[in-house]
Every structure is written in structure tokens, then in C-alpha cells.
Length: 146
Image 1 (cartoon, one colour):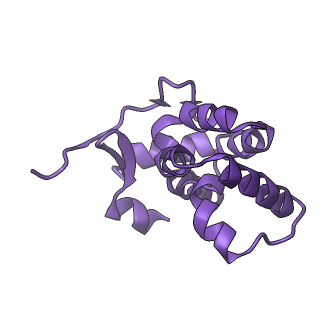
Image 2 (cartoon, one colour):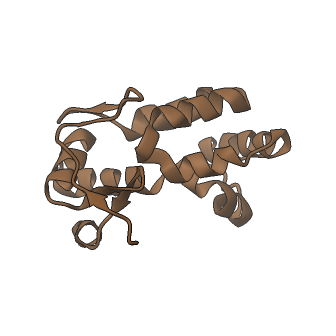
Image 3 (cartoon, one colour):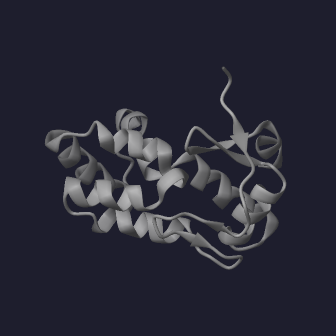
């Protein structure tokens, strides 16, 4: 049976605490929170707070053990110092650095010259993102907008 897609109410509010009113900044607090998550447990809890906006990032941290967490922290510090952490790091942790839906929202906000909350809400209104199996999925219409 194919997965059922559900339109998303606007303004977007996730029960984990992320509320996207039209002037919300979403990606910056996410990026800052990654750096402040000093333990694996804190990283998991932080990413989970963003819920369906970060489903791909949650998949990365769900399988992470302490050695991988140390590798992640070291690579994140390199990236924040404007030193490329490498292709292998990007392959393993790219979805954690910038989850797919957050990337789409950021790109649309820049393109449209609006805050990220407005971009997310408009994307929801236009059917550019739908809820499917408990996660947000960018639709073909959403990909054309980006």
C-alpha cells in the first residue's frame, strides 16, 4: 500500500518545540545547537527536538556510537573553522550538518527574500512539502520551487 501524504497546517508547529511563525529563524538556531551538544545524548535530544524537520539527521544520530560522535565533533570543529573536514565526513554526517528539509527552507528563504518561517509556511501552503510516514517529504512541486 503506498504511503499516504498529508497536507500540513500553517503556521507549521511541531510538538517538539519548533514553531515556525512567519518571521522564525530555523536553520541558525539548529546550527548553533549542534555545536553546543557536547555529548551524544545531548546531540540526540537536540536533533529530536526538531522532529520531522530533521528526520534524516535523526537517522544519522540514531546509529551513532561514541567513536563516531568524537569523529563528528572533530569534523564539526574543523568545518566551523572554515577547514573542509573531507568528503568522507560529508558523506557520513552531511544530513546532520544540514538536513534536507532545512536546506530547502534556507534556499527558498534566500531566493524569496523572506524569513525561513515564511518560506516553510508557504512551502506547506503550496504543497511543496507534505507529511508522509511521520516525516516531511519535499514533493516534486517543492523541488521545482527550489
